[in-house]
Amino acid sequence: MTEASPAFGRIYPCIQTISQTEVWIVSGLTIASMAAPDLLPAAVIMAAIFWPLRKLATGRLTNRSKADLPILLLLSMSLVSLVVTPLPSLTRLQTLRLWSGVAWYYALVNGCNTRLKLRWMMGGLLLGGLALALVSPVSVEWPAGKLPFIPEEFYQWFKLAVADSIHPNVFAGTLILLIPIAMAQFAFAVRKTAWLSVIAGVSAIAMGGALLLSLSRSAILALAAAIVALLILRGRSGWLALALALLAGGLAVLRLGVYKILSLFMASASLGGYSSRMDIWSRAFYILQDFPFTGVGMGVFPTIADRLYPFTYFDPGWIHHAHNLYLQIAVDLGVMGLLAWLAIFTLATVAAWRIYRLGLRAQDHLLTAVGAGLFGSQLALGLHGLTDAVVWGMVRPAPLVWALWGLAMAASRIAKNVPSDRPG
Image 1: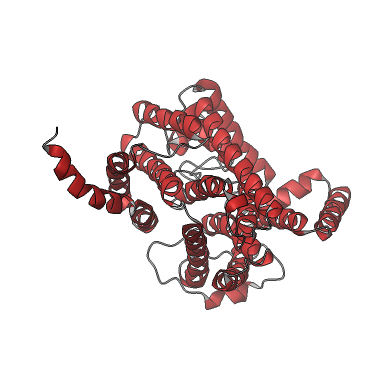
Image 2: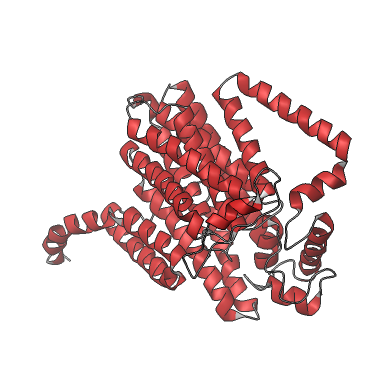
């Protein structure tokens, strides 16, 4: 032991240096795996390698977060999912995507530990959203005809230039996670970080325009709610926006009726309206009644539904997921998996709110913007999840949700020292 100590002392600085690269390497690999799913095993394995290195460098496996226990429960249910699934290869891919998201979460919790790194991470999110919007004309399967003020002829200018195109609903569900962050960074005027404000403004405009072109009504509605929330957080005029929104909603319900309103925002070219979605949701409820504790395995909902609970309005192979985030998670991982996910979601949302309040109290513009943006992002996620499930295991951008949760927990740790920090 005494002979090994000098040798360990010589390599200890190297271990420390390597461990500090975790947040960049794991983030890069996870982002790359969204474009190339074959990289998912590499992302998970690389993240696992950093845990013992972190133990050697810091004396602990990880910084603790309030979501540790529900994350452990969610991971446990993912292992159960691998056991019960009738399609192991499909479930294995979805499980790896979930694990890569958790790995990204802990990389941020441990690595995003300074204000400078927080700024760079937020800037990276904004640049990523801007890049997604800029490449969307040649990468998204654009719809047409759902909103009267956008003529169908407009979409003829867009030609797909990639073999693996993006579904417009997946595209829209990803953008609504990032747009509130961009809007908050710009609206709350991050002082002494002009570059971040400029990127935020440009990103918000580009992503907002791309979202409108996606014609995803449920995503646009969810974003509208997030924008109203940001306006309320920004000042008293936000309450006027909320009052006007509620008045407009009430008048629409009185004029059109609840059923027509629901059909309007749930309708799509492939699914139809409210009745069609109820057909899908009822099958998810049937599955939950029969498999409440384990679920049926990640990603196998369409196979199970087609074989055991045939749809009324859809042919076999037409429906790919439950079109409700909460039902999809419960079907995949059982009720305990859903409760674990909801606990993490709630804790991250509360953390974002506290970051905003702490930043506001200390006049810390960075933390105020980060907290408000993440809070708006989670609000949009929760509302959009009522009608779609495009941020869960079957879609490539699913780990992005975990990155936002990791940033919320990392910023919350930074915010605890805000009284002694220099505002800005």
